Image 1 (tube, rainbow, N blue to C red):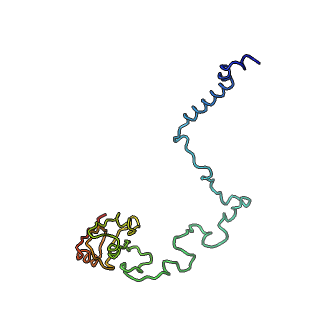
Image 2: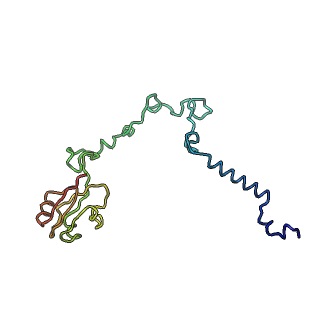
Image 3: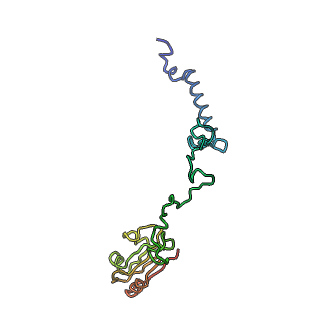
Length: 193
């Protein structure tokens, strides 16, 4: 047995090779720290940039002669555009749809650009879910399963009966709902956004 094998202190001391590997590892870590992200190191994601298709460069390229436009027709001409809403000459959808006049009707205007969107809460729902004298806010309505759509204004409607006084906060009230809430001893407060 060699004296180095018998001595426990010799085992604890790392060999030259181990020390060299450790130093190399530290150097790599230092290099990683030095590499910083900046304008000099930015590059597009692999595969996100493709070279431009060079059309009309000979038959062997696959897009020669007619340059990928095919034979005659609208698409082969210079200045041809793909217009939105154009359906190849058939009657487009915005002309096929019904056109009842006036912005006040639900079925007016093909895409209803003037319609206001609200979510309805009826006073019968408030009567069944809240105790007398309660303050009905948007948060309390949501916790009871009413007016659950976020960022959509709440309008209280007069369907059903109200038998208890409630203080109701909402974005809008129908005239009949306001009348019945106040007749039951409650109050209506309009929320301004």
